[in-house]
Image 1 (cartoon, one colour):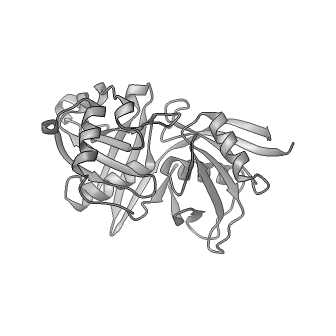
Image 2 (cartoon, helix red, strand yellow):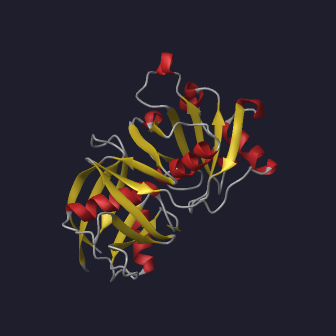
Length: 280
């Protein structure tokens, strides 16, 4: 049985227990794929990451990302959470930015004051959602087609599609029937009304992964990166905005989106909650 340095961090929150938790295992090169998958399933968190030596000389480290059921080529909160853990453990980047190697290739990460932000990777799939898929989504969310303003594939490696509805409170009130959306990763977004909701955020988001051990994700970098590319391309959001996510789960995640030139950065805070040794 080997021992590994381990951290559990909370992503997209300045306050512990209010964001999206992530398990991070360091120096995991000796672990088999099966052992990684088994540990990720055991943690029962939305994602668990394993830090390895990079294969690309431009990268500072390599990461593998597992849900309770499968491995992902990319995910947002694991990217920021892993980077935070690596830096906190004494990692020193080769340049001004941190470069993470993962399934989609190299992902740039930068410090923004006390927060971290990753560069949104290109979409692997975009465009309108097929009618039969939309029917499943409508049934699963318990809404009608007229309540959906627009919908789009926003898949950057995690399979996301997104639907925009009219009312923020309706987003918060959703009680999805996950049996209708098996195999889909569905994000739902609505704009905040400044007069009613205030100005702490501009959009409310929820993320559903039907069939996974964690069927709702409390704060989702990959989904919001895809949504940002969609909204900004169509002029539906300002160059800088804040997303609120996780309130229906008792969380209070906040993600900050900034467009700088042709680049879209997804940022937020990370705090460490647990640190110690893991025996596998």
